[in-house]
Amino acid sequence: MFFGITLLVFTIERLAGDPVQIYTALNPRVTEVQRQALRHFLGLDQPIPLQYIQWLSQLLTGNLGFSYTYGSVSTIISQELWATLELQLIGLALSLTIAIPIGILSARKRYSLIDVTVTSTSLIGTSIPIFFLGVAFILIFGYDLHWFPSGGLQSITPDKYPFGSLFLDQLWHLTLPAAVYTFALLAPVVLLVRSSMLEVLRQDYILAARASGLQERTVIYKHGLRNALIPIVTYIGLYFGGLLAGAPVTETVFNWPGVGRQFVASTGNLDFPVIQAIVVIITLMTLVANLVTDVTYAYIDPRIRLE
Amino acid sequence: MIREVDGIMSQQPQPKNVQSRGVSQWALAWRRLRTNKVAIAGLAIVGIFAVMAAFDRLVALYPPQCPVGLSPYCPGDGIARFNSPPSTIHPFGTNSYGYDVYSEIVYGARAAFIIGLGATGLAILIAVLIGLTAGYFGGWIDNVLMRLTEVFLVIPFFLLLLVFLQISIKFAGGATGGIWLVVFIIGTFSWPGAARIIRGEILRVREFEFIAASRQIGASSARILFRHLFPNSLHIIIVLLTLQIAASILTEAAVSFLGFGAPGSNTWGQQMFTESNYINQAWWGTLFPAIFVTIMVMGFNLLGNGLRDALDPRLRE
Image 1 (cartoon, rainbow over the protein chains, first blue to last red):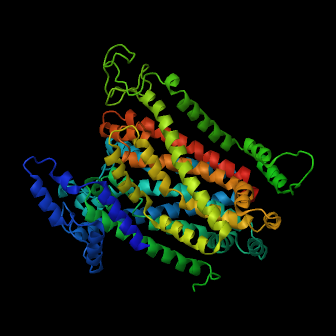
Image 2 (image 1 turned 60 degrees about the vertical axis):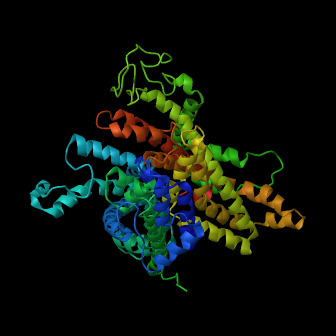
């Protein structure tokens, strides 16, 4: 599977164009001979299968190669990976903390005013393009109100730091993009928690738990929520796999120096080594996320045994 | 309240094989759909957009991509207006090219339908073929097809889309056919989720007695597949279709916004991509297309959810 995906990307990107042409197009003094020499230097004049095998053997020794523009791929990616993870994990944690109680409340008070409001708001929420949300936030809170910076990881010069603290400055920059992620995830998770809880609350063991005189709190959170968690964990597992893949739009909008923005830029530049490295990391993360999801299933529901 | 009563009604056993011409399942589904106000709102939204797309020349105020005041074909007072705010003659203002934003949005509706229906048609076609085959034949065929589906599920869909679209930009250039390439690429990558669900449904329907019966009387596999299994899983396919249209429109808007759309196509995503450079001076050029994407996607989502409730009583909460 891993080889299939990487080989596919490898071939496609080479069909998409000639990076040497792109990088030298603006310089009229570069001759065709020099271009050919550059292609040879980058190994682009060899047949694709050969290039793939060479790249793969380098990968096995942990060498991701050099970007055509900035330097070592592993240096670029490792910095960006942190920026992306920071943003995504905060967004995920915030949206789960907000979405689960709302979803439960909505399921308990089914067809009430609260439920109808929550459900219809969530349906609208799932329809809003994430980049629109980002642009709207920047316009309102960035340009209009000047509450938050409109992009980037931190201020350029230390004198712009609020109270002279780098930590506060980064937090300040993080607020808008993290809020966008939280909103984007909120709506689907609320709907999922609601439908999953509705299903569970109908079960006989909930009735039994209530009949045995347990507190409503215990019934809902210990007996109800735990059984309703399976589809939610599945969703988060899938989301986690695509965690980095989901990032390009928001990161580009907020100029956030993460993997997603890098991927967009590298695809535009046909910076092959960087594209390949990001695909490798995402594929590996997806496989790990699937494994973790399976282990979590067994933890939540002891009936599921890992073979 | 109506929903509750309706829920009880739909759980009553439906008489099968009645001699007299009874009410069809589709009529029953329509009845359920009709009582669902939210779904009807979705249907109305989709309908309005369909009218807009079909009669775009009548609904729009100006011809497509027409720089106001600069072209003799463009009605107006002869004054060129770039990035001018919403006014009585330009309800949503004009954009950086001097086009009327409202008219451009109207022309974008047709592009949105082409993308939504085209990409979804392709995706669901692949999904139905794979789902039916895998579910019906089982065994090693099922195994191979499901592994393939998993590969496509694990593939970082959005990233691969960007790399693929880079090719389409290279080959299609500024040609008008570019949008079909985008449709094709989105379609080829959007099927795996639907294929899995359809397979699951086929696995369920396959076990019913009437399938065994028709096999007993010597019906061919093709007949069972297309005359029995396909119609009996149609309710799920229709729901998947509706929701996938919404997803495809959103995907196209996102890739276009990043600058990977078909150059020269006039989609809402493309409009936002070009106008977002001027968002500080002229927010209307970006905001209004975004609002229309949201409304249209919402329309399909509401309709899809309503259809799910109406078509499959088992899924009703």
